[in-house]
Amino acid sequence: MWIIDFSIKRPVTVIVAVFLVLIFGTISARRMPIQMKPTMDKPFITINTDYPAAAPQEVEEQITIPIEEKIQAVENLKKMTSRSTEGRSSITLEFDWGTDKDIATIDILKKLNLVGELPEEAETPIIKAITSDEERPVYWASIRGNLPANELRRYADDYIEPMLERIPGVGDVRIYGGQEREIRIELDYAALSARGLSVTDVRNAIRAENRNVRGGHIDEGKRRYQVRTVGLFKTPEDIENVIIRRNADSVVYLRDVARVYDTYKEKNSLVKIDGHPAVAFGILRKTGEN
Image (tube, rainbow, N blue to C red):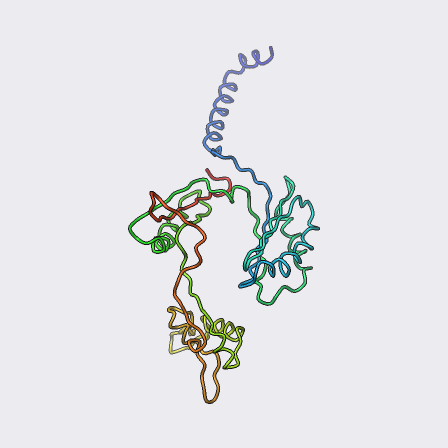
């Protein structure tokens, strides 16, 4: 056979070819990704819209349905599911296999521009292209200690979660158990009505105060100083001292028409280990990582 004849007549060439195959084969084997669960990038795109303090029915009628009517014409759309909850609209779009998510996202943006004006209080819709792997944790971990569940949750948010997120291959970390800290403002509607104020007045005053404002710079000799007004709230007392309205003869503070509480969000998950409160971590991997 010609292969045998060629190998006998040109042994050096054959040896070099064998070495090249071994070298490149070894390099390829070392760089070949190894995964317990190979990536199955099924194209999903979600559209999330926040509508604070709105009931589920209002969210559905004023946010979800108008968006659905325009989005249903997106090309290669296979399935659309929506969920309207208190203060939030979530629409999940499933596309055919092989659909380019970047092109689909552009198509969705064009359709969203055709949606009529959403309620003034509603946030701008957020589009997120996700993979099916990003929705399922690949590893679970949990901790418990002598601290109350809420304090344990705060410690996990401040220290443990950042450490886990820095591990190579970790895409996201979800925390369950305990309650997140929340600053709650409870309005006294009788006090508001007596002073001729509305909820919108309170909201606008809080938004205007809770921010840092740049003020340019001041030149002094060879030095230049940046000037800014620091107004972000640091304590509940800072919120209580917000001025809602100022007249020539009176000033209305937030504390006059509301109460501010440093508390926790509504509990939506419960984790226990051997009957003791605990905190659990759902670890999601980056796409393509082991």
